[in-house]
Length: 359
Image 1: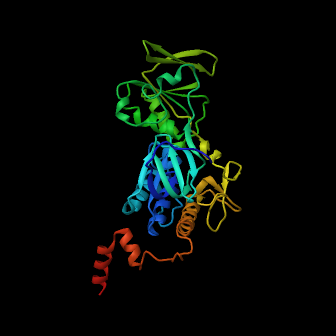
Image 2 (image 1 turned 45 degrees about the vertical axis):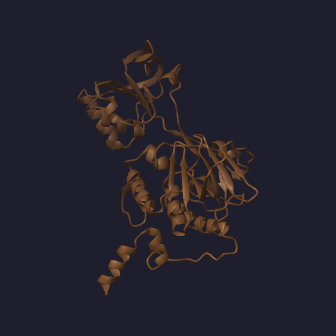
Image 3 (image 1 turned 180 degrees about the vertical axis):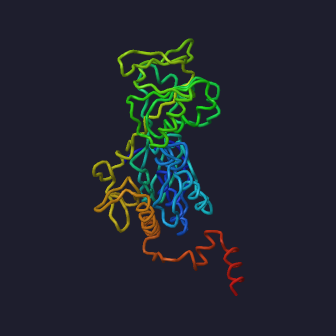
């Protein structure tokens, strides 16, 4: 865990949370209730973690008191819930360096050059930093970001163009359906005739094929055709062994994401099957002051559920408070009745109004 930082003035904070998925965002809330400020960093360029990146519109049914919501909706509600605590949110930042100081605090540096002086670090990184599974053909890298994409930022940028979408899961088919009406042409290329997406989504894509608004090819992209540095087509080796050329201005590849522990594996933390070992009282790792919550951790009886991660975040917050205030008793207070909690949540006015009405 030895690394030296050139920047002389890091941002001081109570906690750095590594990961902006649902558990990482809820960790902000639990820390905030105890009066602790947090800075959140995530290697992805938007909040929500794996579920938002892979299936933002798929329903979740096991969040308490919320019969059903999508990953995107859950993320928005969590962002609203933590707003009173004004956390720093840093997307597109992968934690690259961690250095414990003689004081016991931790210096945290990111790939984007941010530097934090933290009292504690709480790792909520799912199963690691997610990286897209890339199109494995020669020369693909030169087109990334302008003609080859692994996620969709602005759907309108693809209107009127020849599109090739690679993949057979929910993301590939959802975007094929969403872009079909505006594209000049659209071809979905998948290595097998069967898709991994939801049955209703597959049926909708096949309907688009029958209507002549999309095409489906079984095979693998073997090469990218280009002229004067501009993408003009792809070559697909089909299931019958023949190679066919497809016109393409833009290629969208959705092969999923693969987790990468990355620098976390070099922090000197005790690992078990690529997960961080923690205790179940504090959810602290083998290094004091560094905690782990959510899918990144492991302990006897561990269940990889968002619900479980929320529970872990609550206990980790109390442990973090105790770590930062040694010898001080951390009182359990309830958001229903505690004036301190109401001030931190900025609900004094509404609470006073409710009490007046009740009287």
